[in-house]
Structures are given as C-alpha cells and as structure tokens.
Length: 359
Ligand SMILES: Nc1ncnc2c1ncn2[C@@H]1O[C@H](COP(=O)(O)OP(=O)(O)OP(=O)(O)O)[C@@H](O)[C@H]1O
Image (cartoon, rainbow, N blue to C red):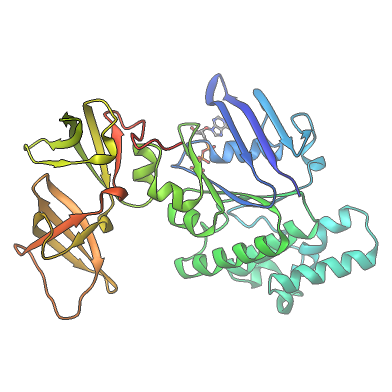
C-alpha cells in the first residue's frame, strides 16, 4: 500500500489551465475523497494519478517513488468508473481473473485470488453469468472485484455509484466502505455528492475551480468549514451578513436591521463586515430563548420537521428539529429560539476566511 503525495500539480488543456498549483497528501490506507462541483477538476486530478493525463507541472509520488514518468500499467493501480467498464463478452469470473492472468502468475494463484474476491464482493453465485445478466449494482461489484484482484497499490474510483438508483447507492457505498477497510487499500474516491462523501470518507478534499479549499475529516469540514464555499457545499446553512464591532473591548454582531448580540469568540478580531453561517439545526427551541421567530412555512419530513422562519436578524432562515407528536406548528405561529454560539462560523466579508481560526 502507498501514500500518495502531490506537490504543486499543474494541468493545462489546450492552453487552458484547469489546475494551477495543487498540493495534497493522501495517507496510506485511507479512503480519501475528492469532492467538488462539476468541472472543478476532480476527474482530471484522478487521471493524473492514474497516468492517463499528462502532467504540466509538479511532482506525484507513491510513497517515496516519483511516478510522473511511469507508464500507467506500471503504477499498479486499480480503477473503478461510473460506467462499469467490465468486459461484456467475459463471464463474471473471467472478468475478475482478467488482470491476474495478465500478470503471468500461476494458475493456482489466479484461481485462489479470483475466488477470494468473488466471495468478498458477494458475487460468487453469479460467477458464470455474463455482465448483461446482472443488475447495475452487481456489475459494479464485479468491477470492484476485478480492480482489487490484482492487489494494486492504490484504488481509484470515479463516481462509481452515479449510475445506480438511490437505494442501491446506499447499499453499495456501505459495501465499498467495508471492503476498503478490510483490504486496507489507499483509495481515492471522486464524487460531487457531499452526502456520499461524508458517509464514506476518512478524509475529504473539497475542490473548487481547480483548487483545494479544505482537507479534513467529514466532521471537521461540517463543524469548522474554512471558508463560505465549504460551509455551503457541505450540508446546508444559513448565511447572514452582519457587522462586527466592539464596545468596551467586547465583540458584538450587528445585523442590517439593527439587531445586535454579543459574540465573545471574536473579541480579538478587528471591526469589519462579516458573513455568519448558522446551520438549520443549530437553533434550539426553548421557552426562554432570546430570539423570537415567526413560522413562515413548515415541512414535515417524518423524523424531522423543517421550518422557514422570520427572525429579528433575517427575513428567512431555515430551522430543523426533531418532529414532535403532540404539537402542530404552522404558518404565523411564534417560537422562541436560542443559538449555541460555539457552533456558529463567522467568515470575513468575501467569505474566504473563517475568523474563528480554522487551519
Ligand atoms: N480532455 C479535455 N480537454 C479539454 N478540457 C478538458 C478535458 N477534460 C476536462 N476538461 C475541462 O477541465 C475542467 C475539469 O474537468 P473535470 O472532468 O476534471 O471535472 P470534474 O470535477 O471531474 O467534473 P464532473 O464532476 O462533471 O466529472 C472542465 O472545465 C473540463 O471542461
């Protein structure tokens, strides 16, 4: 297994730079996700790691070995794509055995490893079928078994679940997580689906416009996003403009309609315009809550109910809480809320920096 180190990577397509200067380290044995909107360069970076794309600058390493000029076939990678890319004319077993046969290992090893991955991916019972006789999820299991059977250094997965229906996607992401843990293989996983990324990853690199915005564990990114892009791309949040000012050395936030509240965590920051990020579940309803809110709309979602509220500092904020059985709140009703200030994130005026000091 390998760590992957990328230093100052640059990618240019037809004089058009899509990645200018990108540096990341992917720890050995981790499931590491590249997450970002369509066109941000995820697939481009994955293909540079695989050797399918030229590299216009920077250094790529598997452990200490520089791989920039290494042929793709020598990099010892396994790949799984969105469109299963398994051979239609071969049976499931022949597909899984394919890479092993190329490696010129003994017949016994081919047989043994093929059986091992057929069992691990729970496709043993289909081994004599052709891919067309399988569901999408089963085909993707074959693709994964085939990729792993050659015992690669790293596994690269590009949107492997996008072609599956919602229920199957959930099952398969669990299966991928379990297999990855069991095999312990360094895995780079590309997706634009933030929920999938949160569910599956040890670490996530959030990308936008060819740049890494933040790298961290799912919980870190959710609770302490480094900038407004990460705050809004991961999960949902209310972004509200305000002004930070000080009185007697204590910080206060003042909103556009004049409403103010103290905000101690920013005592040491300079006066400036700011952007607040408050997630819908960070409001807490309480009888003595200091924020009076009026319900504009409510949506019952079973476990949770989602509300659109008018609060003193904003005309529309989202609020979500566990549904209550006895209470039926609707448009026009008043509720009282408080906020746990420690959970709020505050960015500078252009949203590029978290003033709470996130690295
Ligand atoms: N072969 C190519 N030639 C020229 N431009 C390309 C080529 N491949 C990708 N691009 C451009 O590079 C940028 C990054 O594309 P890339 O496919 O890496 O994005 P992505 O984040 O994987 O998006 P998606 O989630 O839609 O697959 C896009 O603007 C795309 O149009």
